[in-house]
Image (cartoon, rainbow, N blue to C red; front, side, top):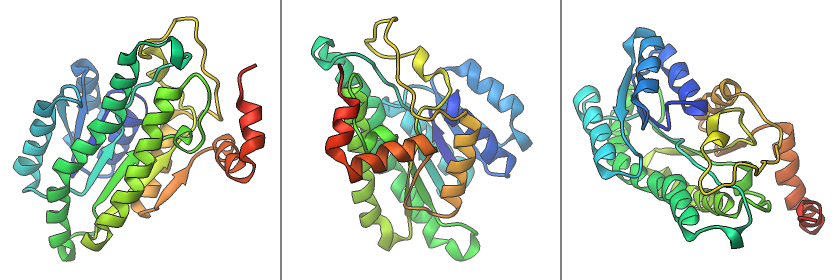
Length: 258
């Protein structure tokens, strides 16, 4: 059994359908009920259970965990913290609410969903002799959680926080038999940029090796199955991340606003 947040579009939608096609029961969480209904109708074997709500609300989280208790006997195999939002524009010109809103969805919501899910994931490890997979927490990060760029300071901050917390959590949970995977896509071709927070409509986003969401979903599932520590997707995304590690001063000059 799996939980996927931000399941109504983009990576979350494609991953939900992919998991369902492989006979995994998926609790799909998103705000848009009509989108979830469409996913339920498309999903194989009736394997998608929709939960309509905001990932920052405790009631939404409790509803999802209750479905795990009801349908999965309290055992959870996979949590995918995928829900995310962004904003574009100079930090100094933004309202403080942009930072708070992005951090709430991209970072704090992921921590609270994970806190609630850990006991259910541990229950799955206790029955591992009867199961075929290691329980996994998969956090969908970003290449911008490795290398920061201008005009996306709030988004970068949220993904750097997610990255650091994921690394710490991995060390904490390894002795419990729970794998923690960080997937860092570059730009994904989705509706993400149609609902940016506190962003002028004329602001444009620089693309770093964009992939379609189904390709990201397939790579994410492969990383989950292999219990990979971390994967960075796309050639351009890897160039950005490793370029920053090898030559940070040069990369800073290249990325600096003119």
